[in-house]
Image (cartoon, rainbow over all chains, first blue to last red; front, side, top):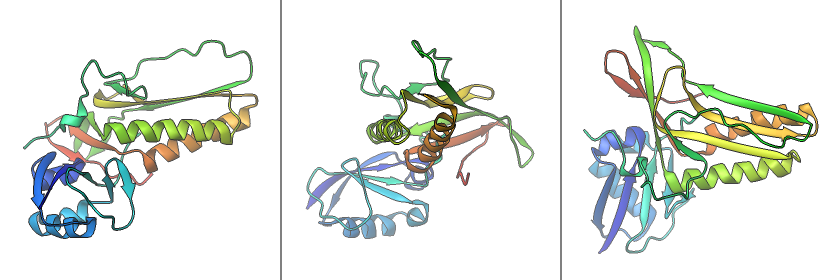
Length: 79
Length: 150
């Protein structure tokens, strides 16, 4: 079992009803964690455009370790 | 419903985020231009009409450490790419009202063409790469998250 710090931004935060949660999970990689969270929060998957692990944006599956920070981010709209 | 991330407001002691400014961005003078082309871009909040409601202000949410790193990276890369003399980027977080500035880009180069191109490139890259989200509020107190396609 691992504990992850999960961040939600923008419209994703509206779906999760929180900007930050601490999640106990059996997932040991990003794909596993995504599957768990997308099952937990309906429509979260459709709102997410990018994911960062420990403040690095990742495009593919990566292994996770206890204490990692994972950010779920909708399309950017700065400027 | 929580509308603001705890990451939206860093502590007053935190001076790490030199490219991120709370609220509207004031005019920032550049000293020692020493000749050449100075081009400045300001993004100003528009009083758009959306579904019969007028925009009153925008709240910017920012993933602070990542946004700061990306703005700094854009600054450094464009400085090198266009051989600029100076390149500065400032983006707001928190509340910015209609008519106020939320993005300021300043570049100085030897000649005008590089300055115009560099300024445009920076704004395009900020919109595509910086983890910043715009929550648009209307005069009837409703809001929506904005998805930019431009």
